[in-house]
Length: 547
Image (cartoon, rainbow, N blue to C red; front, side, top):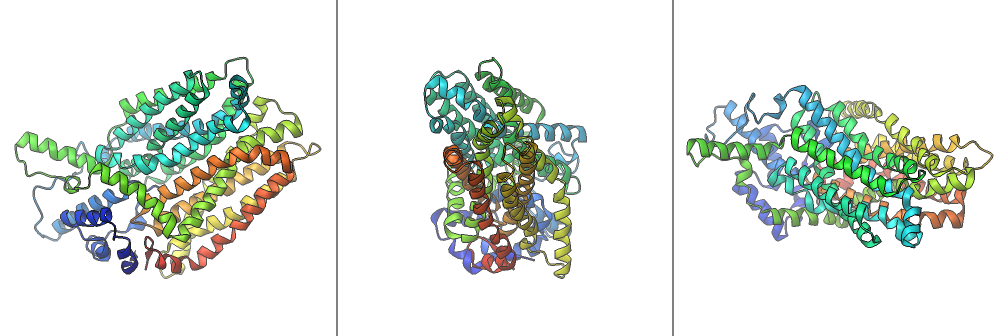
């Protein structure tokens, strides 16, 4: 069983906010963070068996409620007296999300996937109408490109402040509130007659849209048991990668028509609004701690017994305190943990290159092969195809993980997640080099598209490996670690489009892409290093877990 490195971890609890958090754990009747080994041995909690390995969200309160409720069940089975006023969810209760009909689970999953697709499409759709925006407002390329960058930066900053909302008010409130505000600021983008208003609308749309993305993965763990969760999670994981590739494809056809370019924003706003209404109608609250709190309140009202309580109600951390903590810890992870910083920069580079493609692809296909705007949008099909095709390989890497665990006498290590990162780290620079030297007029354009699909495969492999490793290696701080990764990725992805076109114009298509390939190649050895030395580095981290 793995546990937090207690000596190093104690140092991370020195701040006032984290000390009060530690005290709240004690008030709840739960073990302190330093006693995590004892809590795991008492409740038999195998974190590696949970779906946090795929999609962590509010790890802090989920830890509290999961450990508390699991220990209560364990003590009940052993005949130990427990507080009879603690509310639990039994099989068949209205609050038992595992027992809802499969049809309803499919509908919920479909809406989760479509909304993730919608939000991420919004991030890139601006790119192929950028020239029309430049013409209307008489601005340069850099200013116009801010429409992409500001949306991405909003998506990166948003989770730092918005994720805790779901801990107190539930997932549905987060979805509905976030999407409603996203629609409001999309409307501002649609109808604003000055560029400043449009750009502000873009940033705020990304900021509030990120509230959905930061929480959505947890819904699958709320409604599916471990045996059924693999397929819906695999499908959901595709959507945030497919969205950015689909955005320019749709934008290209609108930009190439006689219609006002704002119809691109009108149509996406209508789609977001439709998804918002669907969320209100078809998606129930699924977050177990909040459901327990609601059940406790209902029982107190019906019975008059004010002693009924849910574990969440024993947490004295306020929403403001949680927000400050959730914003602070991801930044501390980046500053105090070099391995986390390298992994975040690595994934940030790979995603930043994807977003740079939104300015380099139109330029390349226009100048080399004379593509029109709609055809330029179609050029992203290769990238999209690669990401889709790579998804089933997650099952293969899962088997490799189990094989390495078996070879290690059944002891699983987070570093066993790195084979996909190693392969993705090799495929990405290879794909970029191939893209560079297929970008000639005497070479058929399909060559570049095929090579871009290989980059899509490498991107998918690398992200899936880094994400699962991050959660396994930073278990107690999984949500903060993922927020740090999201913040870094979005920051870098927003910067690259701002200089991408100038780089391609100055260096030429071939050498600009080669430069990206060399930078990507320079990062690839870190996957090998972390595979060999990751365990030692984790033991030195104030946030990582060591055996």
